Image (cartoon, rainbow, N blue to C red; front, side):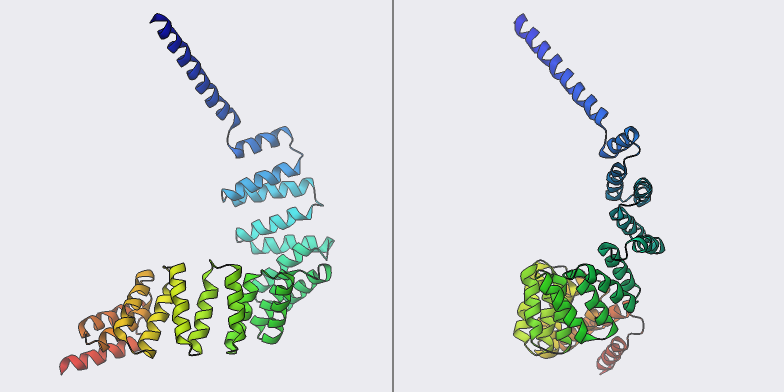
Length: 334
């Protein structure tokens, strides 16, 4: 019995010692950020160490310290232009737009054909609706890299915004040729053909769905094409798929309700869809109004009036809701 007690005490002491050592080791190792700082203290002239710590700061959304570290890395190695691009990204993420532009210009001054710098500059120009500059920067990318799908996509977007749909479609098609899995390019071409009521839009939307069946915009735009071109059964089937994919997306419910109310003329079936749209987006004044229309047509005038009033909460002096309230007021006077 004494021997067993002695063994338990020894085992406990060893286990306790092991736990203490593990805790001590964890304390000694520190967090990844602390370890990165320790590595810099030991080797303060290594730019890669500052870039690694900047990445850790960025993950913690500490953009200011991330910027400081990247600037230090550039100071130590001013020929590594990838670090300049990273700094431009950080400036952009922290809403320091001019800082981002200045960094990119400094890269392009030394390397006019730098692909990443020109791509970033094209994106920034597009953001500020400077379409001529956007296309110029995208073309500079394509001179250095003729198969760059993103450059073609950015050009396509600029042409689309500029109003040249023919060149936009051509550019998006080139983007897909160079990257057949380019989801966004397929959706954009689909949208442009949808505006022309061209059935080829269906092919591009379905291609986008095949590339990434988890994204909602391809389903939604496909359903809109069907709805706008009187293919109502297909529209409803697609909205149902979208509701399964994203039950919190309010516009699927609204459009289903719209088809049932305005086209099928079945307000009793439409009302639950408008109610569901409101559940997902309480300030959806059009849904409040259309729910009011359903209730009015179903003879539930009191609740219809409440729906019209709810629409007015989110759109002051909404003409249709005011007209609805006036109609109900007249009906209730009879």
